[in-house]
Length: 401
Image 1 (cartoon, rainbow, N blue to C red):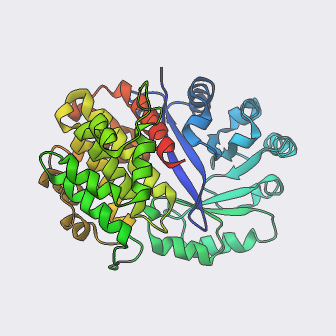
Image 2: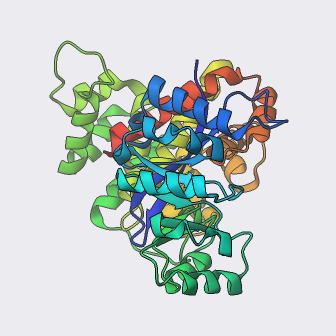
């Protein structure tokens, strides 16, 4: 039994990953009506902590988890190690004397506390001395109110988190206001439209990418290109000798590695390495997200349409290539030898492949009604999606970390 848990990255001012907010649903059948918040939180903990382990979802960074009033009063947060969690108080909580006492006790025990969707008001003042962070929703809060809230919180030792930051303009505005952390997908869009020259080692990668469009891989050509680059050769041998492949003997040559992998896995390897190496000075989370999407789309396709699995993988992997290269997606795709149906799905959200990308996008944002509808359209068993998502996260972590 798996819980439906999506995660959303939280970055610092350097765009480095500092945490994930976990968003929960216990099935796709109960999207409407919503279940009780306390029940949702306890099921989230049972599914993600006791069954899976929160660290499998978040790695080395803490999980930001919503705790409604009842969960706080019965001390549910104390079931979790204080190093692995940031306790988020929902905005609809009435900060009574009991809640203040709970926050004081949690703070004394070393837990970190955040106020979700914070709106400045008098009744929150008794809680603020015990709060480490406030989250301000940039979609629902006006600029003047954001500025007033920032000014009022200056006298407290509280970090500011800008929530639902979707553009680089919003990110830059939040930076000028002194925000410390940022949640949203601003980093997954091109920051500056520009053209940049390829470095010598990147020329090899682009040449390898061109091989993705060939009907059959020419192992002689691939071997020649890879052997030109020591780093690429090392990565290939490390990849093929990793724990993902069950072998009795170690593989020690480029040709042996290529033959062992076969065409499908060679295409994946080339795409992964290219995406990672063309993303200089970009957040590592951008690459992690690309790889997670690729693996998730592949696993979904394998369930009902295995002939689409390879294309679904490339679709997910290149869904963020515009942001990786800081160029318009159309311009980037014109240089890549991808099939027309992949390009149509990425550029115009058209064709059968488009639903695979739409599914992972809705899953990431916890748009559970969309996940339910798209699963049905694809003929996919929605009960397997949590396992696919966890597999995709684990796979991306193994390649990035």
